[in-house]
Length: 390
Image (cartoon, rainbow, N blue to C red; front, side):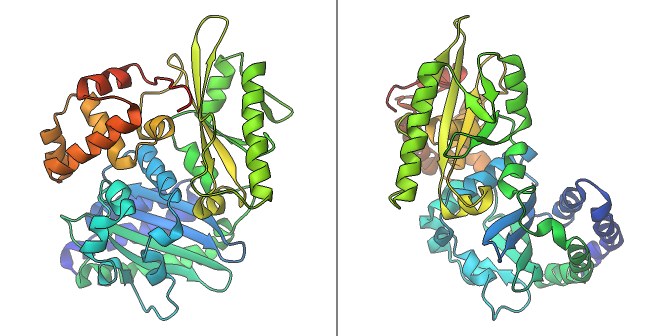
């Protein structure tokens, strides 16, 4: 065991046994482990094999805020499972010990993978080391340690140090087994959107509210022309009809098995103007990928992201995704432009080529219907612009 790591062993062990005693014990442990291992992310993830559903997630990304890390997790769920070759290695019944992705995921694959280029690489997650804490016929609980291109994969001394922690981690996971099993009271997707700063509400296809985060509840308290009645979202009449038509059409497609992963809402952005001439935007995202349904409750749902300039938080990556379908990588570029960074400075900050940033800018321009940086920055400063029939 590395002497430089060994000095943290007692402190980390102490944090492990405090996990059941704290409301965010995993967060405290993951935060410390990211520092000790000098890694990008430590992630605890559970998958209920009996229900075929994600049932628990807690991640800490050393380079991101909690809201940004949660957005990355939500964005990951938009990708189909087959886009991530790591799952095959992790769930391989013949795997012994740690799974390390660099043995199976080549640099060539990474260079052509949208998942890696748009999400994992921008969040400094090129390399992954995974070990199970619980793995039986009903439940799989994993710990994943992720590192950047610059950091490189964990070496054998580092894995040996983590092996010393595994016996304690497995013991605590077994004690808390019930919290990793799927239940209607603890749905992984709900926990993730609770960490996002934008007001977000989840609807089922009958129009019933299945979950709202704190920001959405605060918005509804302040904005009186939006209501929830008998657990249903009530909009001004013309907009209510528009939303319900979309939901009914999606329900028909789902029941007739015609719902496709690329299906989008006809009116993905609803612009409401109230009696005081104030504008509220509602961006609707359909959650129908296999991973999303496993994280948000097993059936298609609609995620509504609300934006009201007077009440909402600042523009962030999730809002840019909801409004313009910007990938996490593109959102990072757009937000840095908004802060005044030049493309060459962004390239240096992200450790990528200037050509990569230029390609991302072209995609951003196309998605936002702008043609140059000045127009893009102006749009973001007056976020969002409503584009009819977008």
